[in-house]
Image (cartoon, rainbow, N blue to C red; front, side, top):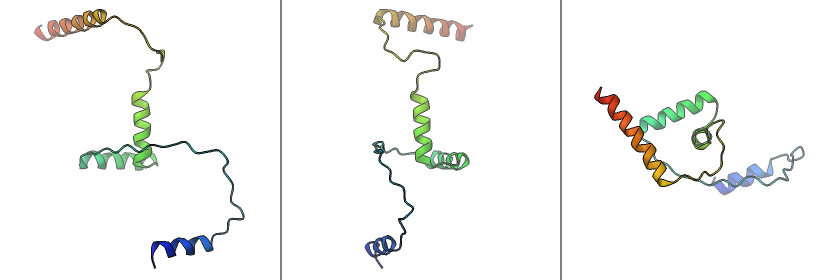
Length: 102
């Protein structure tokens, strides 16, 4: 039997009398494809299993956590002058270089 016949047979034998109707539209989902080395893929699958979910849901959770603003910080745009950014980065690099030279 082919897939079509299997689907038809399954639909004929299903009792829909206790089915519930969902009237709210489902959230639109977009697929992003990612390639992982075998070891990382294995770790992802093991962690998903440990958490009782699947790799796709786990990746969604991890991306949400990684992109969420840090707790306690406002999630709004901030205007900073490029010169101030350069000055701050330069100061941080100078401090790091002094620590590594000591």
